[in-house]
Length: 261
Picture 1 (tube, rainbow, N blue to C red):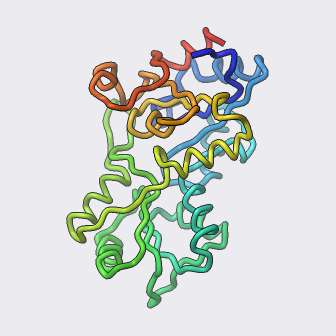
Picture 2 (tube, one colour; picture 1 turned 180 degrees about the vertical axis):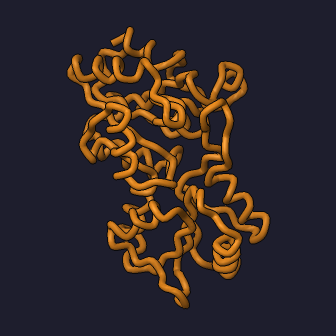
């Protein structure tokens, strides 16, 4: 991989620049080096439990101040698709209050009490209740169009532990309904196209950096976009050996990229 050709880094967040609420000590030096060398950086998180504003605020608390266009989130990929392909369709979104607020910010037609949705969407719902789960399953079972925002099985948290993410919730719904959704976050082509359009640079000039093979790295598969797996989060070298998805390069952390710029 020729780092001289890279003009833009698209960074995963949890496991790549921080873990939970703890910023890695190598993150700020990396971002500074990217800026000093005339490159750009963006963030992309698959975590659909929070709004764009919430992530921008979190980064600011950690000492990283960015413009809104630098913060890409999986729910925006979903919203853009709905606007272009299902305008005006009524939506049931199984998600957090923050996710629902993001849909409302874009004037997406969420159903009111007593209405029947045309489309059911599930996100990473850390406020999931049995009542919400039953309602979602009912509409999925009865034939509503069904989409998922991010396919992650788990979300990493401090202490090396994980909590069930959107993909695991989809498996729960599949067990009840027999249906599994199309996902729109990493590694879908929807996300790759969104990244290329948002950054405005050629695919071969983009490097996607993340700690997960099946999302961060897989999104760049079969394209000219470069992928860098960092070992500061979920994936290990043993995982790389077993996986059919291979990154362009494997490095211990962002610190190693800093040394190569």
